[in-house]
Each structure stands twice: as C-alpha cells, then as structure tokens.
Amino acid sequence: MHTFLILLAAFTTAISSPDGKLKVGLSFPESTYSVEYEGKTMLEDSPLGLTANFGDFSGNLTLTESHRSTIDESYSLNRIKTSEVHYRANKFIAELRNEAGQKIEVEFRVSDNDIAIRYNIPKDGDTGSVRVMSEATGFRFPEGTTTFLCPQSDAMIGWKRSKPSYEEEYKADAAMDTVSGYGHGYTFPCLFHVGDKGWVLVSETGVDSRYCGSHLSDCKEGGLYTIAFPMPEENNGNGTVEPAFALPGSTPWRTITVGSTLKPIVETTAPWNTVEPLYETKHDYKFGKGTWSWIIWQDASMNWDDQVAYIDLASEMGFEYILIDAGWDQQIGYEKMEKLIGYAHSKNVDVFLWYSSSGYWNDISQSPVNRMDNSIIRKKEMAWLESQGVKGIKIDFWGGDKQETMRLYEQVLSDADDHGLMCIFHGCTLPRGWERMYPNYVGSEAVLASENLIFGQHACDMEAFNACLHPFIRNTVGCMEFGGCALNERLHRSNRFGTVRRTSVNFELATEIIFQNPIQFVAITPNNLTDAPAEAIEFLKTVPTTWDETVFIDGYPGKFITLKRRHGDKWYTAHLDAETNDGYVEVSDDK
Image (cartoon, rainbow, N blue to C red; front, side, top):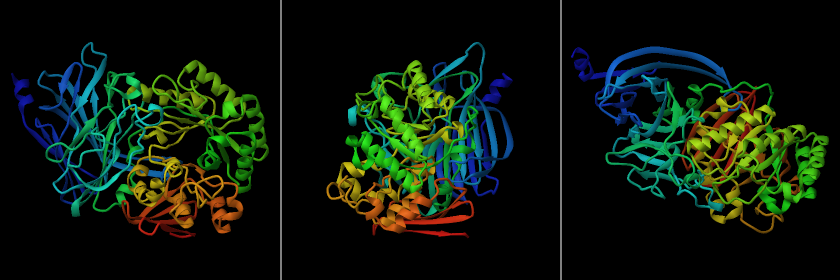
C-alpha cells in the first residue's frame, strides 16, 4: 500500500544548463517536459514516453527515484565543424513506473544550448528484448512559430523507386499548420523560429543497427509534433517499422538546440556530444578534395579516356582523389580498372569507386549492383578494392529508414574499415552522429544536392535560396556531401548547352567553405583550367576541407549567410546572398 501511494505522488522539477540560461521543466505523472531559454518559453508542455510490445509507457508515468550528475569531458574529432569539443552538461535520470508497475528511465542531458533526451529500458524479469511500437515523444511549440522543414516523401517513388532519400524541397517561414508535401511529416533536422523569442532545431543522434531512423509527424493540434517511425512501404516492404533491441538498452537521443539567435544552431555539436566510437580503426584516413566526371559529363564519361582526363585534372589541381562513378564496371571493366587505378596512383591521385547499395528494395540498374547488400559478396569485393589501393567507396540508392537499413549501413561501414575504405553515402538517410561513431564515415548526401542542377533549370534558379538554408538546417547536424562548386556557365560537357548557372563564381567558391564535408568532390571540368578565372582555380587548389573552428557571423535561412571557419592559423570567411546570387570569400591569418 505504501508503494502504491508513492507511485501516485505528483512530481515536478527542473534541469538547468551550466550557464543557467536553458531550463527544462519536468512533470509526472503528466509525463511532460517544457523548455525555457532566458526566461522565454521555447517548448510548451510536451509529451514523453513510448509504447513497447510488453507494456505501455506512453503517459501517466510516476517517478520512483531520480539521479543528478554533471558531465565535463573533451574529445577531438577531425571531420566536423570544430576539431576540439568541450562538452559540459547537467544530467538527470528519472526512474519511472507505468500503471502496471513496469520500469523505464527518461534521461536528460542539458548543456548551455542543447538538450538530449532518451529512454533507458532495464531488463526486468525474464524479458530480454523489447520491440518499440511507437514513441509519444513530442515537441509543442508556442503559437505563431514558423517552420523551415523538408517533407518526408512517399516510399518507393522517384528514380527506380529509391525514395525516401531526404531530397525534397524546403518551405521557409511556413505556418505550423501547413501540411507536409506528402502527408508523412518531415525529415530531420527541423528548424523552428519561435517569433522574437529565438530558434529551435530538433533532430536525433546515436542511431545505429539497434534502431530505426525517425522523423517528425505533421503538426497536430496545439502546435505539437511527435516522433514518427518509417512507413511500412519503405524498402519495398521489407523489414519491420518498429525497432527492437536487447535489454537492458536505450533508444537514440532526441536533440533540441535552442538559442535567442541562430548562432547556437549553426555552431552546435549536439549530434556528437552524446555518442561514442563503435569500433577502433588501425587506419589513418586522409581527407581532401577530388574530381568527378559524372556531375557534368554524366554517364557517358565512364570510359578510359574521360577518366584519364579527370585524373590529370585532379593531379593538376593537387587534389587527393578522383571519384569514378556509376557504370565503371561495365564501361571500363575490372581488368582495365586495375590499370586505371595504377595510372591514378602514378599521378599521386587516389580513387573512390561508386556502388549501388543494391538488392531487393528498388529497381536500380546502375552498376555495380548486388555487391554491397550481401556480406559474402561484399567482403570479397572489398578485399579486391583493398588490393588495388582504392581508398573509398560511394554507395548510392538506399531508400529507407527502417532498422533493417540502419543495420546495413553499419555492416558496410564496419566491413569497409576492415579493408581501409572510407564510405560516402548518396541517395541516403541523414547521418546521426556517425562522424564520431564510425571512424571511416566521411559524408552523406541527404539533401537536394548538385546533381539536380544538371537535371533541371528550376534547381539552378533555386540554388542560392537552398544554399542559404543548408548551413542553418541540414549541415548543422552532419557532414553534407553536396558535390558542387561548378564553374561552367552551362552545366553541360560543352559549356554551351544545358541548364544555366545563376550564381556567380564567388558564390560557388564560397560554398566550399559554407558546405562542410571532409572530402569534397568538386564539380569543376578540365576546360575550367583555361576558361575559369585563374584566381578561382588557385583558390580551389588551396582551400581546406577540414576545420578547427566554426563561427557564425550573421544570416537568415534562405536569405543570406556569413560564416567563418578556421583551419590551422588561417581564417576563411564566406558569404552567400540568395537575393543577388553572389557571395565572397576572404582569407586571413587572424579572426
């Protein structure tokens, strides 16, 4: 009887950030949390909880015990927006029981501008695993909040039925009651403007083989968005929607970045603060720039002569890499590819090769196919790649966020590291802390990227607008493999036909700093050595791809951005303006 009375007791508390400006309020058994920053409400009472296959933890949770502690740690990471991170946070764990007396924990970590939330499920009795059926976790925004969101597409649509791939168009400053383009909610990360109070960025991190990738629902009554799982149709219907993991275990982290300005949003390290490396590597991976013919010269360029021209271009530019894209196995062949790789090495250029993720969930015919989805074939292929001195692979056309797909990402990364191979993903999901979790992970597309400039004039017309969104949204939470900086005036092999580039040369150069990815495949062509401004070519030869520090100066999503990044003792200032399609770059030895 005594325990029963304790379980019914109401409990409210608050967790503050180390600097005291950010405060999270908790209330049980209402099972809600709220967020204030500098005394202003950024999130109203929002639901907590989940439903599991063995119990309902989606509300009416009662506190039985709580624990507070502090976190003060530092880590180094050479492939994100800053190379040294000092993470200080206040940690709070609420031990809870549902109405049936079953246990769950809600864990909060609150740093000066970031909140991380996850659920820890203990092993209780003989139950050794859990299937999470749904999450109640929500984010309720004050009235008048506007949104900067990318809709989650239908499943099994697009090129060869390969979506969703996080490549839809954003709506800027939209009202919360605007229905997403497909009615399935929105892909992470999600940016919200809470009027004159400030900004909130919502995302998730720490997703690996033990969970699915999630997204936000459409807005429900009262400004509420909730966590949504993948659609059943994704991956051609293969795999479950609901993730499962062994007990004891934890869900991924839901992250909330809050600021009165956009500075904490752009500079956040929330995706990496709460995760750890999943395996050690014996390899020293080298980052840098590369050429790739496909982005302008397209499929027909996957032949010996054109690839030699691009190897020579990479060598002339002092770039580290060439990316040889789809179709190389058929149009060049494995035997001649070995000789081509040898030629690249003779020019001090290393090689990335393209693969389809392949298999039973789309209709992709671009090859090589059926190499990366089967562990036996994959390991044999990777052994050949290692024997040839190939340094990395670009794997395309994933199409889904189910746990089954997250498991394949992890298997590919782990096997690739065994063979000294870096991985870039294309037509894919958002990285979720992967730069720290997987030492050979170097970037993902997961954005309406440079290939769309070739495919239609609309993308060229919208390039500046989109480029001024990415530093505030997509690129805040992970490496973004955009593959841009085209210097052709017409995005065609001849430079005389095709879509028209609307942006200035200075704009294109500035994206090399604004868009962060440790390996940048640049959309220049051999003719640019003579027809592009000499100073532009010289800049591309020397601009770094890794950064020791990032500082937001000014900007507004979709309108303009001014950003500084430091590499060693040099500062690179970049500016993009969507209204004028222009920009600039400045390099200096001081801040």
